[in-house]
Image (cartoon, rainbow, N blue to C red):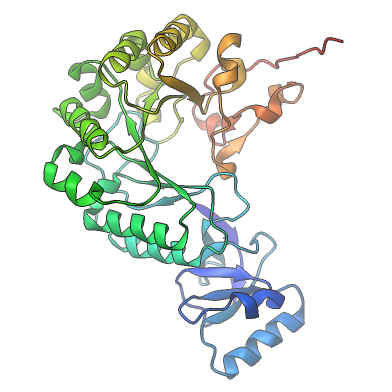
Length: 376
């Protein structure tokens, strides 16, 4: 969650708003949306006051050095800040739909809660309506989005209505899709441009179920993957590179190639050092280069089965040189930092860098600047 300092007109509503410039308000204004005019000069406040006195109750003002035009945010006037739910200028965009989950993964970066948070569905729908420029990709995450039931389908259809060119990526453990009733109600006739990001942590139940701390999860996940295939849905498998998974990674890659060849790609992801991972360091804290042989063997196996793969959240110096071309800059803008060791690195601009909170946890490898020399 991103909070920024801001002050507002005293009667501003604590609901979703779009930030605009005073000069752009007239062409962006809609009756059923809420707007915050970013104050650049005192005249901007006065123009808002005139609009309010004329009866436009869905317009207020905001003063801030950190709020940006195009932000979708919720004012917190009593705290002197705002929660930014969507930043137009970000490279990556996602919406949190619930903090509840039916798994309990040992490296979960956002430990689940049990309280009812159905209000997040309404908030997400409002954000979707307030976004003025459709993002290329919009992620939907939790918690477990499938726990929303019909609410998830509503969100997907609302995105298709307002942002038809946007690719939606749903991060889900897929377990509830093992129910034919649930998979049919969610997937049948779905016209949203969507890809499903489903974690798989083992080629046997005892590995996967241990990682997600839920008995029977392996079988449910596989059934959910088959349901997605039945409805011709694109799938990205996600594998977090923690110690129990790295141990069996070559076998897991062979299992995927033999039994799940329909997946679009496999994402191999460095662990985020926060949440439950901090409480399970003995399983989660690794130096990826110590596992270079397993990473290379897994990559060879996936290539042999013609399954695409990529590395995410992984500094380039944490990978064998022959795998670096498969690494993507994937850490969200507001989470991403670089360390002092990165300053002399010649490939810094194409590197994922580190999670901002790595100093509270660990780095995914011993950082080393990569110095590439040009050849005439």
